[in-house]
Image (cartoon, rainbow, N blue to C red):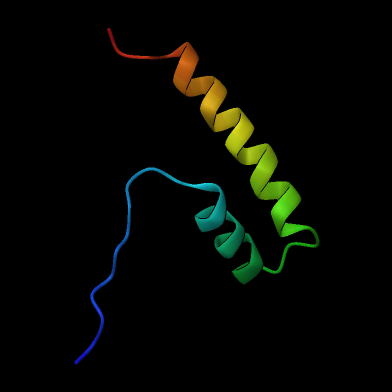
Length: 49
């Protein structure tokens, strides 16, 4: 029996690291870290009221 996918809507640091590894980035963890910093800043800035 296949394991069901546990895909989440919101990106996490680990999920972005995995995606960047698949795309063969040179520093996937660093790229994912910068992506998450921007993502979290935007979340604070454009929060729905």
